[in-house]
Image 1: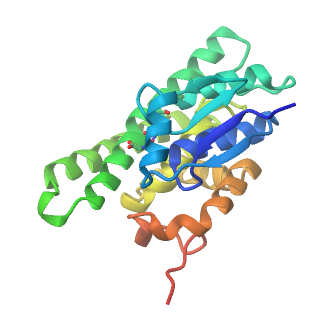
Image 2: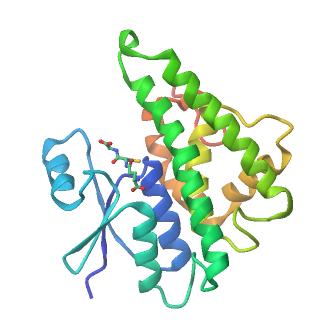
Length: 226
Ligand SMILES: N[C@@H](CCC(=O)N[C@@H](CS)C(=O)NCC(=O)O)C(=O)O
């Protein structure tokens, strides 16, 4: 049977979110690498995704876009494994912290990347400062949330952790987590030790040299070439 196709790139935080989820759910994917620099790939994304963004899943000709929706779809394909709990209240918490990680960690992290990719003359220090402040506020909120939880939305690893892992991984390269946010620091270590996260980070290693914030990555993940 044909595997669902995932149009993605191993360096992209959004794609990593879905790749982590697919591993946890045990859903095999036919991964197709997207080159955003190639107009043909851009055109393909525009054709299958309303926002023209990756990742996009295509299963039996049906295109599914937006990371959280893709994960909901993958869960339907999974043989019993779950990243969004069946319990309605627990599911609300997972969806909330998934949205929080996307909007308030992933988005400011992407904004900082976008600033770095601009020519120096076009950069906005105000935009960068707003993104850095947002990240610090988000770290504080996550630290409070993690005071009495193993994972972001409770005791089980969920879609919220799939979102938080790549978002935090890249965000801390720009804005380190303050030393007093001990619950968040411990959580980040737990995330990095999670087998699905570790595998996805490993697959991205050859691409870290293209991440504009690479100088801030920990030496255990990236060593600049001589
Ligand atoms: N909200 C979207 C965000 C998708 C997104 O921002 N994708 C980035 C890669 S991480 C992308 O395709 N960027 C290319 C572009 O914006 O042109 C989701 O969760 O799927």
